[in-house]
Amino acid sequence: MAYQTLIVEIEDYVALIRLNRPDALNALNSQLLGELGDALKAADENEKVRCIVITGSEKAFAAGADIKEMSEKTFVEMFWSDFFGQEQDAITRTRKPVIAAVAGYALGGGCELAMMCDFIICADNAKFGQPEINLGVVAGIGGTQRLTRFVGKSKSMDMHLTGRFMDAAEAERSGLVSRVVPVAKLIPEATAAARKIAEKSSLTAMVVKEAVNRSYETTLREGILFERRIFHALFSTEDQKEGMSAFLEKREPQFRDK
Ligand code: HXC
Image 1 (cartoon, rainbow, N blue to C red):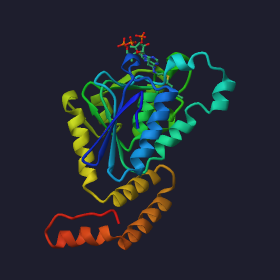
Image 2 (image 1 turned 30 degrees about the vertical axis):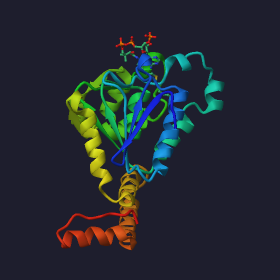
Image 3 (image 1 turned 180 degrees about the vertical axis):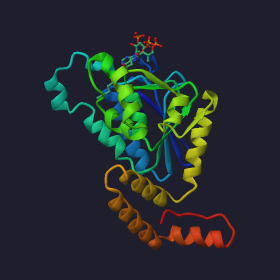
Image 4 (image 1 turned 120 degrees about the horizontal axis):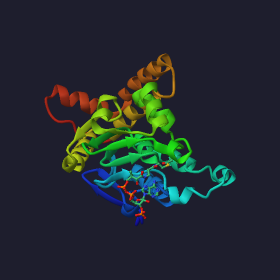
């Protein structure tokens, strides 16, 4: 499918989705987020995709929601359109693992989009921020909730209240990102991580994602019970038999997602 604001490439079971609005530092407008939801749904349904990477340019992952698109809107318009609510749901409904590969600015909605992914690998030039307060608004697609879960209350309050940016070293130190790499190595490193995931059983990877995400939604006791039950359930799959046999036979497993 042809997109106007995205470039999608599929290779070695990895879908690489590049946000592509260079003139606006990949600011997130309705078209881009709509296309991103469609691209993620298509990747989820495509047997040739086992892991997804979302990235931007070296200068900007995304500099936030598109301020030009939003600036004249009224409360009633925002309310009736449920501005970016559906789009956020479409992105977070993705069942296959999604990695955010962030270089440059990830601000406002850009930071929020990165946090909707399953983990973030960033370049050493990355800058994260929730500067919405400078525009007289608050984060609107999850920032106050997700950043707080990633980095804790004190740093989240600091970021949201001062609007300051966090560099890559601070982002790694505070648990927002899983790894920092030189900017030239960002795409190779992120796609290598994605290929590593793509070597696993896709079925198992999707279950792992569900279980980790469950920890955000439930109590420890319920989460542990959920994990135990799906651990038990995986013993009904061919991939569990294959994975354990391969270990015992000292060979590489051949997973079939069954
Ligand atoms: C629309 C944007 C944009 C944005 C940058 N641009 N960010 N357009 N929405 N969020 C455009 C600029 O207008 C400019 O277009 C071009 O991109 C290059 O930007 P510059 O400002 O000239 O670049 P630079 O000086 O390098 O500064 C980079 C920057 C700055 C620090 C990232 O652009 C900036 O502060 N952007 C806004 C960041 C922000 O406030 N984000 C939060 C948005 S609110 P022209 O045509 O002039 O060349 C949000 C809410 C989410 O995200 C909730 C949604 C429901």
